[in-house]
Length: 198
Image (tube, rainbow, N blue to C red; front, side):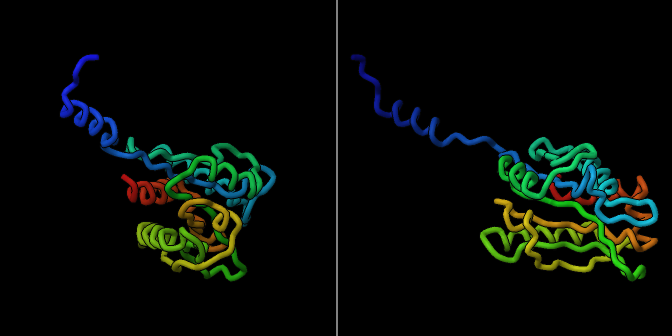
C-alpha cells in the first residue's frame, strides 16, 4: 500500500464536501387561475382565465435570469382542479408560488390590486413579505394597492412553499379592465413581477 500524505487526504475531503455551486437556482411557480371550462370572473366579454394566462406567459418570456426558473402550472387554455394544481406545485418544490387572478364585484367603482396569503404555518412570514413586495411593485399611476389579506384558500394552505394569491385588478372596473386586457398593461404587470427576481 502506497503512503499518501495526510495533508493531501484532508485537502481532498475538504474539496469534495465544501464545494457548492456559486448560485442556487430558484424555482418560481406561476399559477394562472381557472382555464378550460372554468372561465373565472367574466364581464363584458372579458374573462379572468384569459387575462391571467396572458400575464403568466409574459412573465416566463420576460425572465432573463438564468438562476431563476419560471414554471407555469398551465400554458394553454386547460382546466386543472385545485388539488391537481397543489400536487403539481409541491412536486416542483418551488421557492415561491404566485397564483394569478382577476377580481370582480358588483360595485364598479372598486379598483386596485390586492394579495392574499395563508396566515398560519411555516411559510406565513415569507408569504407576507413576498405579497407586500409584489403589491409595491405592481401599484402605480394606473392601479392602486388594496393591501395584503389573510385567506384560507386551498392552494395557499396546502402549498409547501411561500405562496401568494395576486388579484391583478377588477374586471368590473373600466380602468382596471382596460389596463389588464391591453398588451401594454399585461407586459407592464409581468415586467414588474419579473424585476423582483432579476
